[in-house]
Length: 459
Ligand code: UDX
Image (cartoon, rainbow, N blue to C red; front, top):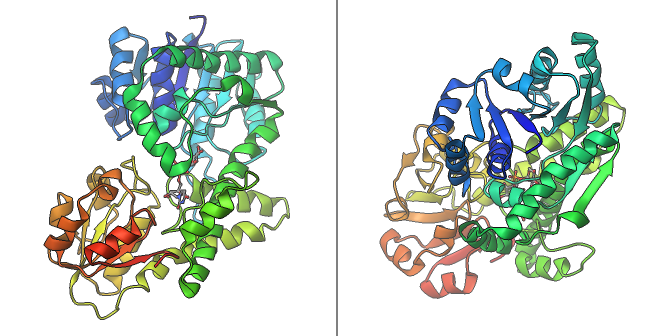
């Protein structure tokens, strides 16, 4: 392959991109400053749960194309394309913390060779690209480089799927030549994907598709957006803000459904059939969490403020979201003495990630209100323990979790929960009430089994 690539940051975006690019023949350095992460990757697996990723990491190492490293000195000088995939957490005031972004740029300025392309995949506030170009120029004024904004749209839980079946490619910057180089790299993934059997991942994708309207075929060429730097930066956060808005909108309608005995799933199904609106991201429930929506929405509100622009719509979306855990709790008798089983702790199914997880928020609030709570999650127990109130009772499977409880709450819609034998669960748990905080269970079936069913906007 014509390019050697370095990818700074081995998170969901960085490691997935690195592993998949290595699988199509590029030599890819996957760089991180965390020795523990690099050590795990060197053993041929990922340090977080992401379907299909271990296979790509293992194959990358075997072929020698994927090179995990702590060293910028070893990797950057050899690379003609350098991706920045570092984290951009939010500060306590909601603004984006760009510390890692600038330290990655500094490493690039120090070690990059002339002609290298610096590609920003991390989500940054609009205007950051220009600042980084200036910053690199100040650090090393004679370096010849170009800068491309290439925001990433992969979602956790389907990161491999989303990279193989790329939804759309956005590239923004001043240098047409560099935009072309990045387009070519990703179009090569498509060529390979078409010819390979990813049935394992495709199976999951089919399931995922039913959950979130994702597609399972490749149509790369129709989905390339080539634009200016600032627009590319804004496309990413605007897309996430709009999706978050859709969910909060559905949650507002759910509250009205509860008062009027309408079923929000039926309402949104009917509404979503309108192509102008679309069906996806209209599931009401506990609300949105994770590593992207909360910080991207607060980051958008914050950068808008800097430019004297108010975002009342996004502030309302945040407020609706913040209230959802309490709303779900309001469905439980405050004097309940029996234990409550909470199924699911990750911020959504398919991932071990618990960052800003609505389920964890729900559990901790339940404890705060004096309830006794048992929890179970198929993949995120280790990560969840650090975030959970120590009074929570941890369990090892669904059966243990539901045994001798009065109320069961489905907080994260893992497939194994949806497909569980609920008749048996009813028997072992003795619970009278099932709260479907993700609106994914078969309501009629639950009632037949003998549960009192309470969804969010769906009774
Ligand atoms: C999101 C974007 O989808 C992705 O394109 C971007 O690159 C990163 O941010 P992610 O954070 O991994 O991806 O998760 P996503 O599937 O978008 O879900 C976000 C949150 O919304 C989850 O907590 C999920 O449970 C919730 N959600 C989603 C709903 O409550 N209802 C829905 O209908 C859909």
